[in-house]
Image (cartoon, rainbow, N blue to C red; front, side, top):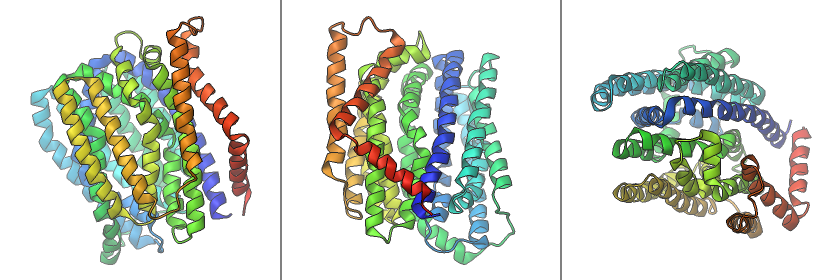
Length: 476
């Protein structure tokens, strides 16, 4: 099968499994949050954020080093990678053991134990990176999708039961532990990789040549993903942290749905990095569909944030709407930023991405500091949006040095459509023109209007691009 066909079929496999997982997560995460309430939900968010920050020692992204390599990857490389992952996991667990008493004294004894449990789970997630990388390099996306489906759904069922039984934040911690245990067990069982102790200093040097600059990029990424959650919890308390965490969960649903495409695009960019025409086509087509699908979802959050918050979380979660209002555009842009990041990673420009991360971190720290001074959870969401806009602009500029940019119309059209849809529906809502519609129907209006307007402007272009992808899937 051609590389393009493998990529498209992989997208179908992983996209289908991710659709199932996302639907299950949404169906179960919402009742979990309702059972827990904002305060317990916020306690979990705090422990999770601190665990992520402490486990920055695992930010070398060894799996990316394996996937990105355009040289032969064999037993020595995989065994060496597994040892490195085990050492990183042990270091993270040690840091958590030191931090747990401090967190326990500041919050509760349960919080300290939760931190240790999450760090324990992280060890198995790191180990699973190696067989997962072997499956992806072998283009065994059917196996990867099957693993992701089981791992992404079964633990959530357990978490719903635990939350219903009154275990509070422990229900989510237990879910995270079960996820990593299942992920490691399934990945090692399905993958053809087996550890044989073939440590190699040469392989370690090759992996670390990529992983060292990657560490700083991933470390900053972890800080950007978690420090705002921790700041909300520490500055405002568990309950506001629950609102903020719930808002980010909804806003990042689209990004979670595109994670299979993210991993596949990294693999594809790495493999065609020496072919400018194919690289430009892959870059352009990925951005074409990402912008249109993500901004369609962002339109719903932009027009009806309060309605969505009430429908999902019920009474007592009103502040989630304020968070969603600021994170609507973030929901559309965040996956596009990650695609630009993958273009740089896939073409070996890791140090370029590290420079982007430094600027991103500077904007983030300044914005979060201002939000903490304002004393508002919504201001923290605005800080995250400002950081994303600045980092996307810079990452896109760096990516444009390595690949021909997409046609300007491909970029302008979805943003223009978003503006028209948002303005039109907000005006109609303010005038009472939508009052007769049931609340469940309101969030569907913006994406439907967005899609209709895109088709009216671009005609059969989206269908032609889909036909091209279908042809690639059939190519051998």
